[in-house]
Amino acid sequence: MPAVADTLLLKNAGDHRSDGELARTLADCRDRLGSKIGDMHAYRGTSSADVYVYFELPAEASTVAALDAALDCGCTVAIAAPSIDRLQGVFDVPGASASAMAAFHYVVETDAADGWQNEMFHWYDTEHMPGLAAVPGCVRARRFLNLGRGPYSLACYDLVAPTVTASSQWLAVRGTPWSARVRPQFRNTRRTMFRPLALS
Image (tube, rainbow, N blue to C red; front, top):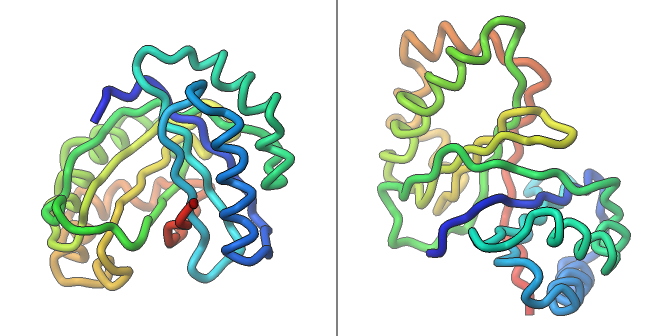
């Protein structure tokens, strides 16, 4: 996998089109962008109308040029996204089930209470993310800083099934003393389970 310099994220909190119609729209957007961006991954909420579309930029790509290209080709209009957020990757590890197909994408977005950001990020990157990545059923664990509209921290987990988050191993990682200390300091938190959209 090429090194990723940055990721662009389009969010739409209320897209009620069919999977087929939305996939065709996004595939057309991808084709018009061509080599100006890297890989494109689209997800739809399992119990919401949320649609998240990630553009992963290769290390040699210009973030500004890719952003301009996405805006110029009408991607934000195509999925009714108000803007594009720039994500900066800070954590990325393969999970215990790295060889399996990821059928779900779980996202946790949050800000930190005043004075808690450093400890929260240290907890995330040294205990929480590695611990969840090691749970059977986790394919990949990543965390980004959202340099756009936020929330500032976006952690995401590619999973083989949504039930992974209810497993005893997953809950054990969530139930550590450090987790109990940090989690009450989450602010503006959104937890969303997504499924991938297949683009033709």
